[in-house]
Length: 264
Image 1 (cartoon, helix red, strand yellow):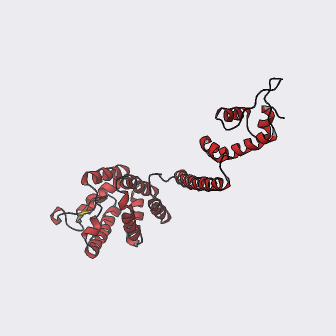
Image 2 (cartoon, one colour):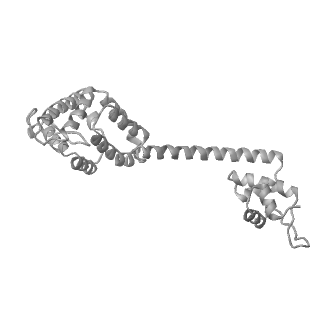
Image 3 (cartoon, helix red, strand yellow):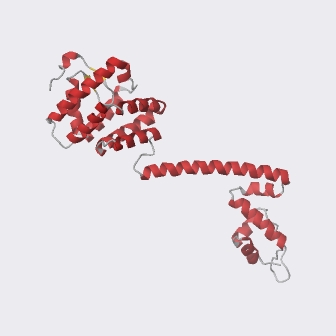
């Protein structure tokens, strides 16, 4: 016969756990012997191991009592149900791990994977990291505000960065970040960008260019963030406005009288 300490040791639990199982009615508590000790037999060790195994698997103690009293068929069905729940929890934890890994890699948990992939593509193409960061910062509120449109916007973005003109735009802008507002590269950039946007509007329609569905006030807020982070971008938009287009987040055609095409 075993003492409570010996029982706990054989079953791989603590004395406190044994007493807890006693209090919950899961494990019968024997009467004390003439020496004042509670003595346990081998059957109690077996029962305690079964309780510990179920508890370690995440089975609530209230359910443990039910399973200990179940017949073979009921026990098998319960185990299958527990396994299904555990597999779902493992899948959820794996998703958490992937999100944490993305955060450790510098990508925001607030961004959908397809946006993260797009940003990585920009980096792979050699786009200046400051521009990538501004793109990322802009996508965070956009994805939070209109998650149902992210896939549509991303499809368009992937199509655009497949065009060498757009990549050249990004690369040239990156080189201009460390230069003054009167850098002639910005004028050249405005010319090429205006030509590209006009061509795209003519071929795809202005709806394709400006179909963001972003409220003007929200677009203005995002533009301000871009201009504060990348000052040359403000000068670029000023030049672009004189060439018939305006806006960073929300592209719009402007009245031709506001500026002549090609005017610095």
